[in-house]
Image (cartoon, rainbow over all chains, first blue to last red; front, side):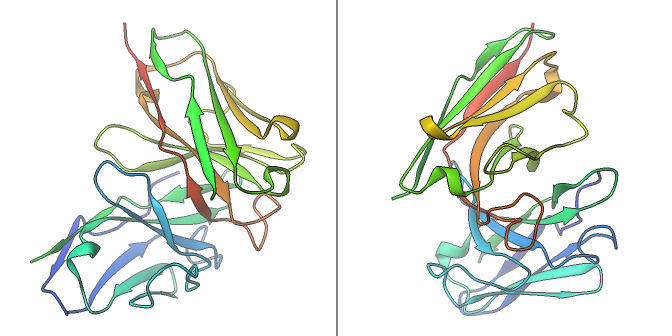
Length: 112
Length: 125
């Protein structure tokens, strides 16, 4: 399965909002509400930040939000902070070929 | 506190086998779907395999199907990945992950809420 498409990098100043896109097809992102997002700091394991498109685990800041339109899911980070600088990956259930999961290409967020 | 601890990684020659283990604690292991996800050095994430809580249903990425076998022992709170016919492109950090849900590929599942620190597998001659 081909990876979902994310921008390689996104940057913003402290306090600003940024949005990361995650584009797939009707066989994955567009066909199911099973999109999740992960934050990964250097040298650390990924951390779940959004599941089922827009649900947030209780420990995750409400500055992070998820949405979906058609074959594209989005992660928005509001009030950007230094601690948000990390890599972000989306993931989706996919039914193409065989039931499985596909991840995005990853986006490096830089806080200017 | 949920903890997932992987072991069994190392350097192996192409064509050889390796078995990864993951020991879980801090939650009722038998209630949840479990997965293996890998990350090649400096690269993105790739889902490898998942297993239902009662081992009745499993899934594999196309890239490993027929070579890798996932299993679990709920009595030992352990998850395993038997990797055969290893290739250089299997070189990666292998993470053991817990699913948020109870049934593989079903509503209420499909996200990975806890991750181990990973076990490095290097396939090279």
